[in-house]
Amino acid sequence: MQRAKSQAHRPNHNTMWVKPQEGMLKCNVDAAMFQNNAIEGYGLCFRNSMGQFIIGKSAFSSSPGSVLEAEAIALFEAFKMAISCGFLSVHFETDNKTLVDAVHSNSTHINEFGDIVSQCKDILTTNTDFKVSYIRRQANRVAHTIARASLSQPSPHIFHIVPSTLYSLIMNETI
Image 1 (spheres, rainbow, N blue to C red):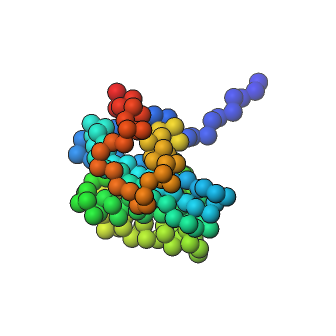
Image 2: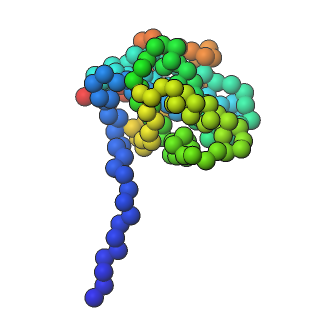
Image 3: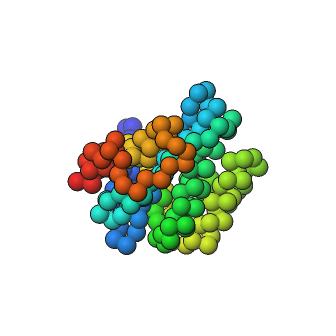
């Protein structure tokens, strides 16, 4: 008699964006690389428990860095924006599992990525109502779209209202 192979336990990661719980904000972050990795851009988007757009940001810079470093910079910039806006309880989501694992790890990377992650960890230590988690790329479409469009805006660019290019995407996610 053959035994069925047991499946490895895998957390259930949503493929759709989910509203944050009451009293929290959610910030999705993503990064993009352009022109053979010579330019990195990022996008971030804060929304409330009803799914309403609060504020967003895009920026780009010339950098010979890696995608992983760009993702870490996006998270770090999201932390800084949350603090400068006075947001206290924020759930940050990224579709980069390596970054999330590094943020939650006790080990340190001795490189640029590790330096940025260390700065993120310092912020998390003093902002205990900040939470960082992984989501699938399909649930991170708004931040991805903002990151991909970062070159088309002055850098950095703060969005106080939903850009027309994102309106239908945000509305479809909050139904």
